[in-house]
Length: 149
Image (cartoon, rainbow, N blue to C red):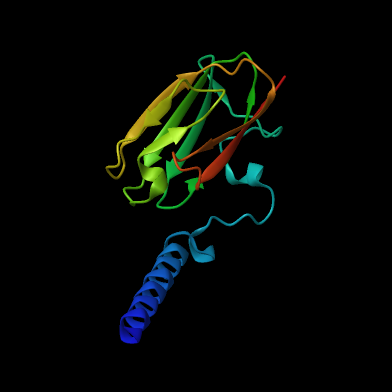
């Protein structure tokens, strides 16, 4: 009887350690985007005020979905001007490769095509000034859209 309890403890310990190691590999510090400097500087498509460029009357923002991060993961937009958000898949699997939730900006969930190089275009018009978060459906991979006047 004592032997069965030992086997149960060892089995549970192995499972817990495996889950921790897997989590570290998937979302460990080596897989996170560098946050050196200001996130605003990561988006080369922004003007000197950090705002998204306006092309044909739409603010254009572009983002790549990586296995466990978004690049860039910060955008600054003006309220009341339509946005064209181009989301490109890297083809890497991960929590963020299936869908994006952007509460307050998008209706429902935006489902992504996980094939490498596939682009999903989402259009919306931010109405209210504020800071909005977007994430994978589990909320583990996150980004920010700041809307200003």
